[in-house]
Image (cartoon, rainbow, N blue to C red):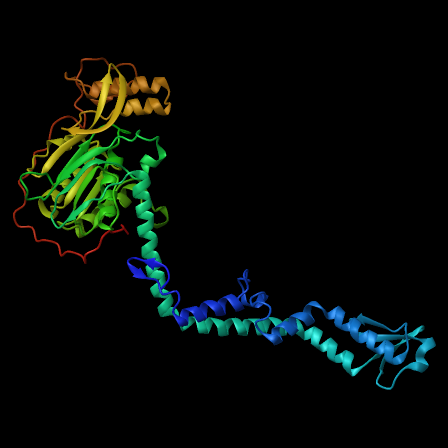
Length: 475
């Protein structure tokens, strides 16, 4: 029956497709032209007329030489020649000494001082054939190709059936090979709402690292109404500590499990989701007048309007493209809406540590672990319980190579913002270089005061769920 794909025999040997296979092998050139009007489409031997035109096109000089030799023998004029010019085309040239031997079928065309020029009906036919051979050749090849195409078109249903089986076989084989090479495990996919991943890894990021270098992490996230697992994971921690990787590997593992693949984790129990939403990274669309922040808000709005309780949402740094108070307020309100109304499974990474003050039974605080040994920062890339209170942005700026004077000034300003005693100058003092002093408190716009969390709304109208899908691209 042929090759086996996706548990079904691949019907390569069925008569219609076998006939099509033989037709294409016999007719279409192995390296055909991409244009119909360039020739080089049909193989030699497929069509007799086409072969004759090709011979005429490629061997016009041979045909002329053969005819010339015939006329030499008939006339006895050994010096007879066939020449060509643009005015009268091909002609026989006979010297004055042999004019008496000219046969009756020679037709005079032109006379010159040393010779006479003649044509014949046969020479005119050969000339006509030579001149029309190229056009006829291209036209005939085109027509033959279109005929073959029509025959192939009749077999489209069978070809599509084979293509589907090959595609399924390809993805199963590719997933099986990747699972074997990269030590992926078979997940358990169920109808519940819980997602439980032990020792999860990012399938792409780990490929760029040495074996065993990627730090795996666990995840347990459940139903918004469950008292055992949180449905909203708030993740804080330093830049470069691995928050974004943690978010994306969760989305990828969920998607891979639902598509039937093994996953990069020791164990994974995946509750089916209807969509995976992703709001990460920075981009803009200046051609449409959309700034980075507006693009971020467009994507956030799309998620809030279309996500359902069965969705998985990952959000990274919502609200960072505007003022501190604006951004914090938006991030806080978005978090509350996802918690109270949408109630989907959400991983929300942020540098707004104030969000850790949100009190909700479905919210859990996690952070990326860091060792701070007297200013020596080590990112452990490991998730831990509880929120973080630092972002270590100045440390990352130092790694990037900012001037030391800038880093020192930034450290001074941060100490003033984080100070515990008050001073009357407010931010004016920060704007005067060198006048700040330790131990004084600045009432900054993003101080440690927490905004009270309102009670969950009681009368929200649920949004109509979109048609079920696996992965939703943002517009």
